Length: 140
Image 1: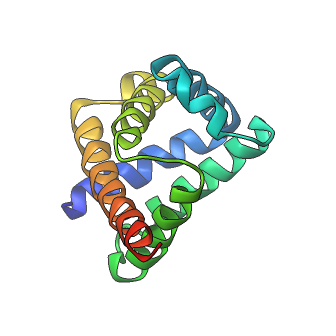
Image 2: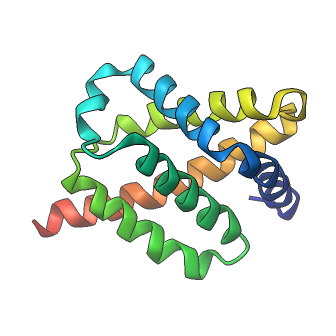
Image 3: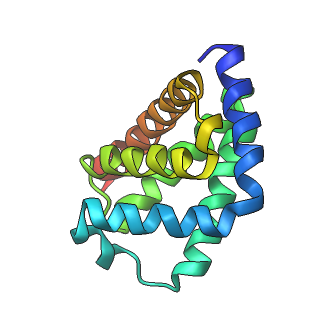
């Protein structure tokens, strides 16, 4: 990711923060519409799940300028998701739901440049998560 892309992701996420609970609800509704088989993976209360999601995204977005520190945390997150039943193919569905949610939440501010920056960020983070998942699966 370029420094400009990191700035775009961070500033656009700051615009999402005030509507975090709505964004989380939009995200999960879209995710389950795209792949209803994912719904059973979420056992807890969805409002709390949404808070955790937005907190995790916020932490990841905040750490984009320090990947050396962020990467091990994201790898561990990916490893934990193995136990939840997350599979490799789910990452693409999550990415689609995330970009759609950002488009809904940001409206006209979700420019092609912002979309590309988020695509790069999600691609990077999901790749690191999947590495953690592979390591977890290999160790099991």
